[in-house]
Length: 215
Image 1: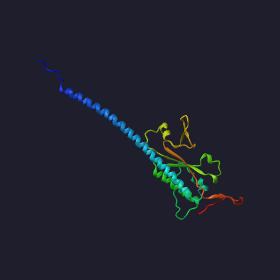
Image 2: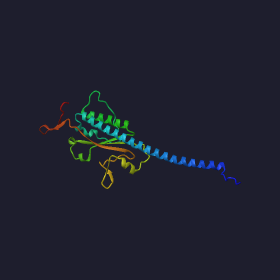
Image 3: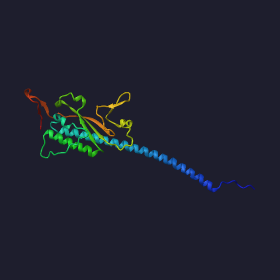
Image 4: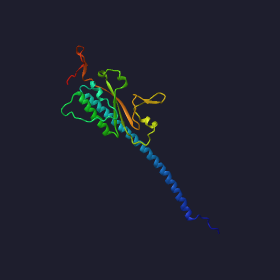
């Protein structure tokens, strides 16, 4: 009677171990892929939330300018660069409209720094408004910049999430307003109209004065 040709039990266990290791490796790759997608989703969500914060901050600046009875004549006071960090003063005992503009700008820039990671802001006169007389300008450009927790800082990726860039029909990107977003930062650009609560007029051709109803 022939004996059965059976494999050694140790070799059977070895094959099972190899199969288990392969299965674990494949499963690990799948988990890593899912984690990568999850991290990308979280990053995009973070960018969206910070952009929403930037929009709310710009809206806050617009509301501050609306409460200034003569913001139209003080547009130059609101103009600021990314690097400027004005000191917050006080209007506890009352302010002129120019002092109020200075105070609001300092408080607002501090809010940008406090609410966004490495937050910065630049306020500028749009190119189309530079040729207009100072007292007749009707809008300001606001660019807010913040630092993303990104591992991908390549120009191609940053261009795709940069709201200050304009994409032409051929797909090329350019700075829409001629103002550059700081390197390695994400930016949001928005224009805000300036309310004309105080109407300028020149009685008898004399020095321009301002009529502010209800002020």
